[in-house]
Image (tube, rainbow, N blue to C red; front, side, top):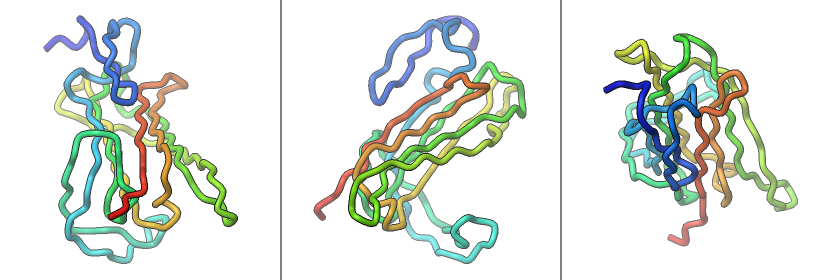
Length: 170
């Protein structure tokens, strides 16, 4: 497949729009982008001093359900995957996550986290891999509202995906 010609489809929420590749560099490779509701099954919560919260889940499997609606239940979460082309290998990208939070008084607000990271290498020097998976486990994460995942490279937006977290009555 020639990665430099033709059209790609830009995902805006769940709407796909055709865009000429020349208008979107860097970008993600068509057919290799998805967003999903993920569910962690099994596993064990183990101490880990190298993580922000001091623990991490190990030895679990993940069930993926295409889409962007996530119930606010422990063990459920969100995932974005894309093959990214048009970037020099090893260059840092910026991941920004904006999510809803509740204040101590119960008011709705949003919180934004930003981190710099590298993309994962692939079998091709033309394509690198972006993968972000986040499970809702803490009470402050189990809040209804919109989560926004953005990936930028040198102030150029590569992808933006929104998820709706909703209260599940079950």
